[in-house]
Image 1: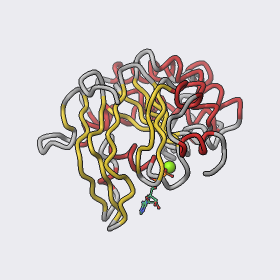
Image 2: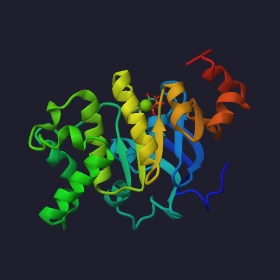
Image 3: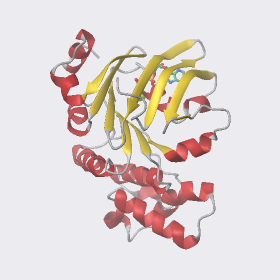
Length: 256
Ligand SMILES: Nc1ncnc2c1ncn2[C@@H]1O[C@H](COP(=O)(O)OP(=O)(O)O)[C@@H](O)[C@H]1O
Ligand SMILES: [Mg+2]
């Protein structure tokens, strides 16, 4: 376990419930700035729920609650005086299924978070939109169709559009929940390349079912099982010499 003091974001004893079902059990886990942390484990073991606790999205679902702390740069995002909307602009999220806002153009999609926050001039918005699309490696493909509907792009482009939308508000952390599982191998490769570039400026926590992907792109890997964190360490160590039998079984495909 790494020291909380060096982690840019660290969960401390996080548990999360849906009604009486405790989906995440007492997880403590942090990630250092500029690193990619991969969360792996069988379906239903609480990866998405845990991810949503890291930017207060879990509480948006009815009949849920959580316990524990999440320290972002040393401050608990669950403190009474913290605004969850502000939390989510520092700690952005990208989902499994690309979800561009259907009534909005490419440019409007990227600008959506900026407009929600307000206080940006038109030219600031334009330059942030271009910057975010460049960072998401999409600018060259869409610069001549900024007014086209976001949903008119291909699946892989739509996912990069959603990444651009998250980047436009300049988050320090990007949470990605199986961002490539609905994409073809070429689009997946582009997003993996993009992540390697992005990690220079953003700390990334990614849920993936693809073991090769976790091995390729992450620095740290955490293995979840039935709501618990079984093992966490350097990706190379987790894949080459896991210390727990459950981890070994999972990564070698014996279950899950
Ligand atoms: N919106 C929800 N309402 C009720 N239960 C949920 C909801 N989302 C997830 N769960 C439950 O929480 C547990 C963990 O789910 P999840 O975090 O989605 O796992 P994973 O992402 O690892 O597949 C499962 O038992 C699942 O059924
Ligand atoms: Mg999930």
